[in-house]
Length: 110
Image (cartoon, rainbow, N blue to C red; front, side):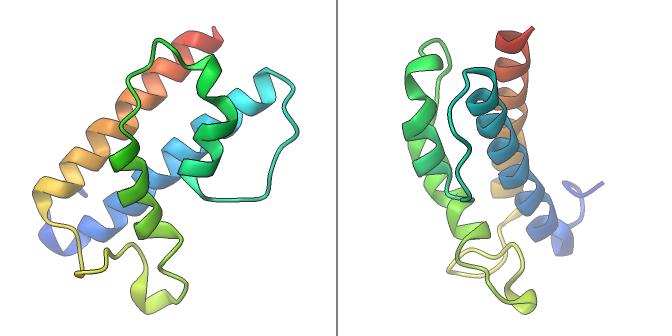
């Protein structure tokens, strides 16, 4: 439903960021890497990149998702990009990327 209603795209995008972050942190755990207290997907990916050789990571997408989470420090800015709410198309792209990361990491950890 979040991907079908234009006024909820910021919520869908925020959850996509959270999904990718948690997947990256699961890889940290799996390989015994000291957990870091960060939400920065670029930083997290740098720590785990050698374990995700077979996963097609979109670093531009990680940067965009960072903007949704890290740059939105106040409740009024929850899940917003610098230009405002993500479009429905962007929300679907974020969802698809997060789904891909989830499936890839889940498969790797099995």
